[in-house]
Amino acid sequence: MARPSRQTAASSGPSSQGPRVLLLLCALALVLVGLVMVFSASMVKALEAGKPASDFFTDQLLFVIVGSVVAAVLWRVNYRTWVGPALWIIWAVAVVLILATAVMGTDNYGAKRWLYIGSVGVQPSEFCKIAFLLVAVRLLLDYRSGMVEFRASMVRVLIFLIVPIAIMYRTQSDLGTTVICAVGIIAVMWMGGVPRKVIAAVLAVCVVGGLIAIFGTGYRAGRLVFLDPWNDGKGGYGTGYNIIRS
Image 1: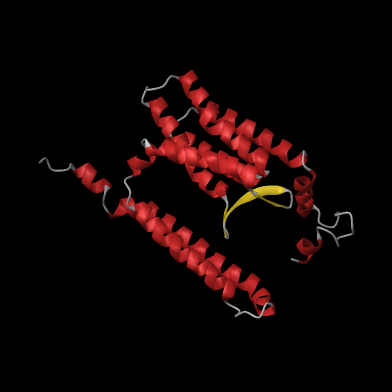
Image 2: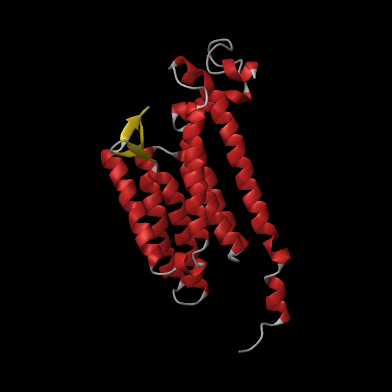
């Protein structure tokens, strides 16, 4: 068996682990800050309900433990698996979840974003973020390898990315998730070596669409009150109240 070259051996050394360690540390920091915020925000509510102050914190900590175990298991899966045939199963599940949420989702404040299976509630859009990101990687790989021509690639992008994301946005009124998906796809394009002109064009379309989504909807436009919280229509005692005092 041939020995690995010096370049290959070096690429798998400690220095190559730097970005991964940094990513894990960032995720750990977010989790810890999240736990602190959950405890701070829920302590009084738990006490008012006659429960221990750490009741909601304990539940959240359980989710963190379960999520960490699942992440550790998925980390052991070869990365090529995620862009193989299994990817289309993941994509199909994501689309089914979007449609199921549109039909059977729970309506909260005029938006259907949660799907309850018994007493367990899930937010399918969180799963869709990962699914659509993986699809973007696969479509770019197919194009760069010459398996699919440019026009066919654009058709595939339309069918497998734009249409389901548009349906998700329309049915769930979730601009935040839509923006995250768009940023992820643009990041894939940038890291995949897509020409800057194409990326700039896609970015411009996303910005225009985002502005239309914000200013075309009253409640989203109302969130811009942070620019001038005293001008909230109630002399600083409406939607600008908390912003002014913070």
